[in-house]
Length: 285
Image 1 (cartoon, rainbow, N blue to C red):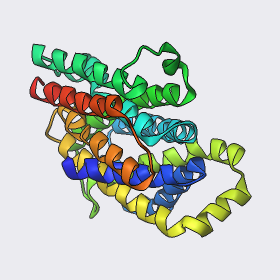
Image 2: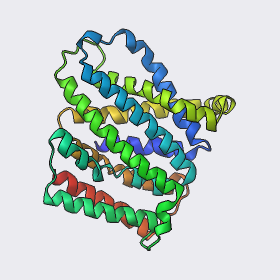
Image 3: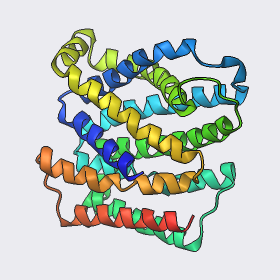
């Protein structure tokens, strides 16, 4: 999960560095989707239960909307603000995982949630009372991203539970097939926004200028989430997303080293507090 967290921070930094995050993220999903098309001929369709079909569709929609929202967030704000908020999924996941997946949160976990909330406040405001900060476009998109990430995390966890009971007769691991299938759906969800905000010509220019970087980011994205899906096969989803929250520290460091962002003491303290809170959530799961 630590490896997944680092990879996630790397590809998000690459997306933020571009002048057109919407084009970058759409092309990332599109390249992955095209690479996945040959898998359609090898999937053991008869072995796939109906529930998994619906879970794949739901995951496609949630992931697609998350890419759209993330692109808009990076167009509006700094990585060191958007990323810590959008990655604070463990604040929401337990609320879904407890009733839907039968998981529980202890008193320690509840304290961790409170600490992480304080961390988010520090990240966003630097420690001052600035209610207007919560209305800024970057913040609003980041919180939408937070909810969408919680949603697809629970959906994907359930999908991995279903796949454990499926007799999988395919040379490609089930988690990889599931990833590629919902990425195909994600690309279709992202297409209208990319077409409207960027346009065909700009997409071509972005692909020519950064095709290698986008392709590398697509591979990194795949590796990052495959690690998540494999852990989800056996570990509680609240624990998985909690450990992956360490990506916040990686992202803040990369923002300072590669993007020239200079988060203040309040924001850095908030990032540390949110990670500490998430660790308590993990221990209390």
